[in-house]
Length: 204
Image 1 (spheres, rainbow, N blue to C red):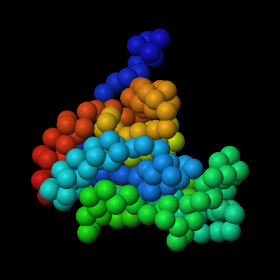
Image 2: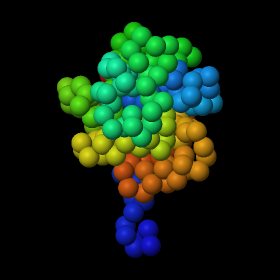
Image 3: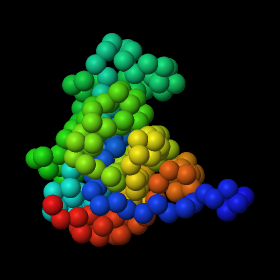
Image 4: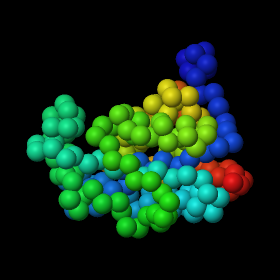
């Protein structure tokens, strides 16, 4: 059925990438938080991608979910679906980027209110200003904000690449299902080593 529909076609890399690190904030990477899980390997593999990006001056954007309103009203109905999102309030330890990440001085931290990193944020304007044609999407969760960012990246006309070992979720089933679906419809799911090699070849 997938073959007949022409799905799972590989689009390939462009020439001008940016790395989007989705929500690797303590609220999701620290199991002590109600929203958190064990994502140490995702952090490690994302650092592999970041090292290549920093070596070649490829721009990096790190997103985090932050609510600035009482009862997280600025998250809209999303917080009704997931009430624990209220813990991601401004000033909380849970909004801090995981300190195991190798964040560069020029990396941009983007605060968002919804699932996709593109929704009502500066991301599209920044990528356009940089002349980006390829977004490398790492982080968490595969079934949530990673997927939404990949879908919107495709919708905005970017080539989407997801480093397979650089994304993670709370359970293996939604993780695997959404990697399958991203590969089939919205972008290319590729090994971290291959993505690093691609970025390493993108000299400024």
